[in-house]
Image (cartoon, rainbow, N blue to C red; front, side, top):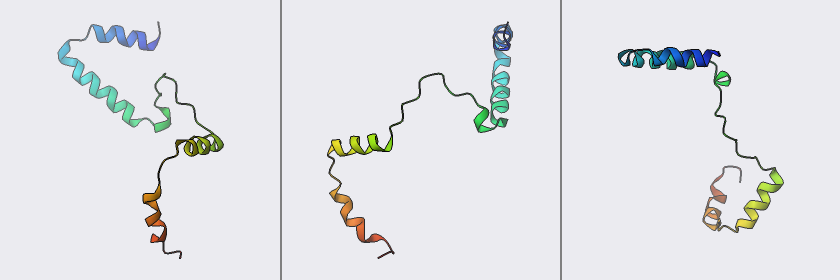
Length: 78
C-alpha cells in the first residue's frame, strides 16, 4: 500500500470535526516546500511554439496594432 493510499484510508476513519485541522496541516506542510517541490497537475501542459511559429501565428492573425503607434515616441531614448 502506498503512502497516499494509507493516508486516504486513515482520513476515511477521521471524524469530520478533525478534518479541518488535517486540511490545515497539509496546507501548512505544502507551504513549507520549495516551489519546485510541489508536484504539478498531471494534465498535459500546452505545447510551446518556437519563435518562428509564434511570429507566423501573430502575422497570420492580421491584428490592428495601429493604436500602439502613438506610444513610439514615449521613450527617453530619442
